[in-house]
Amino acid sequence: MAKKKFSSPELNEIEALTTRLLHANQKLEAFEKSRTELLANISHDLRAPVTAIRSSIDYLTTCDSNTPWSEVQSILHLMDIRTATLESLIQNFYYLFSLDAGSQTFHFERIQLAPFLEEYFFTAKIEQKYEQRHLFLDIPSDMEAIVHIDPHPMIRVLDNLFTNALKYSHIRDSITLGARSEGNQAVFWVKDTGIGIPKEDIDRIFERTVKLDSSRGHENNGGGLGLAIVKSILECHHGTIHCESQVGKGSCFIVTLPVSVS
Ligand code: ADP
Image (tube, rainbow, N blue to C red; front, side, top):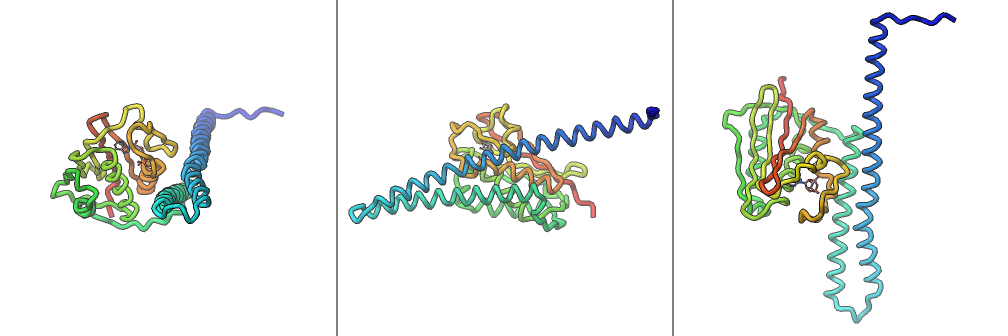
């Protein structure tokens, strides 16, 4: 049978299609790898609180009428903390999976970004947990950018960035919420003067598999999924996030969102 000869445009088209298929395949492989790693992490992360709860129960079963009530109470308190960790891990994993699967419903609204951020800032400023930080706002009074966002997950983004700025900083450090319009983008950032992040770790902090050095002084009771969730939420808004940081000087998390035109 005579072989069909492809014309030059046909060959170009085949080549372009092959490249696209290769890219799609690479993306699928990367996605599959991150899912497998996430599942391995889930089993690993769930094991620690479950083991702690199990040993507390084992201990409680050995108690009798001679066991001081204060001892029982402290075990119950520990179980309460571990159960809360477990609940928060499960909620985070579930939320991340639902974002991945596209089953999370968003209720987008056209919102003026500056007042939305200002309201968040002034609510945070009176919260007791920020009492020992200096909170600053850096938003131009004439900023008029309107964005198409679901306010609830966007508040979750801000909560995560603010909570991290608090967790990874010290007494009297500062936390700044800033924003600017840049062409057809609205940009906002949360900047702290805290402990900073080593250069080699910066890209990894948005991964679902991140396990940074525990010597950085914080028990990881959020499962290290906060920034992965933040990134997924922003992607659902066609936005981006990146981090600039210097160890010992602080970190700045910069978010971009497309400006809504209609
Ligand atoms: P978690 O805080 O629960 O570990 P995140 O996903 O929110 O999870 O953050 C991932 C990691 O990024 C943290 O464990 C921490 O090492 C680093 N990180 C995040 N925000 C900051 C910050 N503002 N300053 C220093 N390190 C940070």
